[in-house]
Length: 449
Image (cartoon, rainbow, N blue to C red; front, side, top):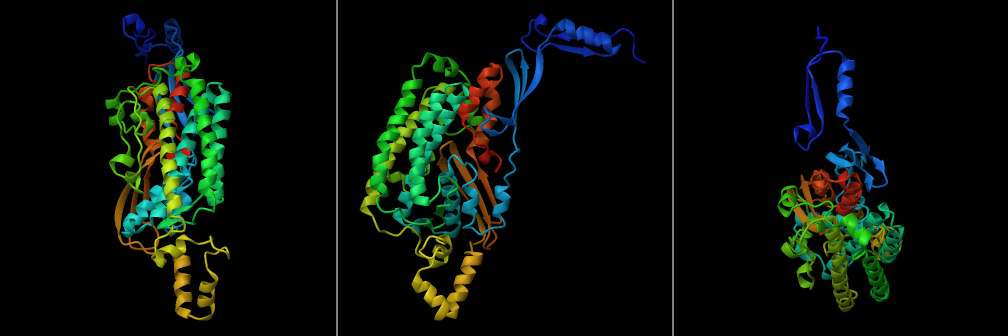
């Protein structure tokens, strides 16, 4: 039976330590314990931000332990989106996997598709057989998507602080990118345009000239956002030294993309392990001297201009190779990957239809097997990395020799970047949590893939 007199041990600021008040009771009446707790007058509480909250960039749960307005502990809870993309890929052909991959980070779908298709091509052993024009189109789409993704990051972050004008300007610029995407792929997002072996179809006539007409207004929108933010005293008060993380800590926690480049490390897979011909373009890797919310925004601005440099180089080279093939020559790979893009809506020329329906039973069987099953990928496993808009994206693809992936796993940069979030926010203010999260720019479709 407990003693009627409680034994109390109190710790906290009164003992000269900057930590939470804590009461340890080893017995006694509960009312006496409560009275002792009230004497400590602690404002410690646990609050949830999300999983459905306008500042969490998707279905993300942040569990915050706060003392007044100070964040003492922060934990990230993921897994609320339940996309099941990686598992679903095991039940579809390698070509159909592109349709799943594009839906992961839905703000930057072109990177998802490219990373996946490069992994499939590496497993097939056809990386060097991809036509130059296909690689140029891939680079064009990725760099346009990099700008669009950065604009969403900067604009949505501003909107969460009450700067709606930042969001409207950012989305106006992104709209020009989406107009190009819609012209080329038929869709504004979820494209499945980049396929194993190349791309689904060539650029429509006049695309390069139209892109050159739209790019100056895109550059103007980026400049307007800079004018609103770079020396704005309110913006700097909310961003400078907020969400700071040292370079060594960022590396230890897997931080990547603009977040790590803001700390001064030029970590960019386009330079370190070039793919899709990036080694043939002139561009720089922007860095800053400290990874805080302000410098992450500045790195994204600088990367938008570097992407524009690459895009203009790509447009010139696309004009030089106009009419060149955009899909690998091997018809076992090319036919399933180009379905639903020809005049009959099924990817079949009239000559091919005439052959398989009236001249060659072998051709009909071959066509049927390719369309329904897809091509076979030799048994083995590969790992492919690219420089996603948010950092390094990795694809681990395993094949058992069949027509479907045995396993597909993605190292999404949004997921790895969230590991650093607690270190950025603990000890800071509750209001800074929103700014820090926006500066990381996670998209939960990629986190909960």
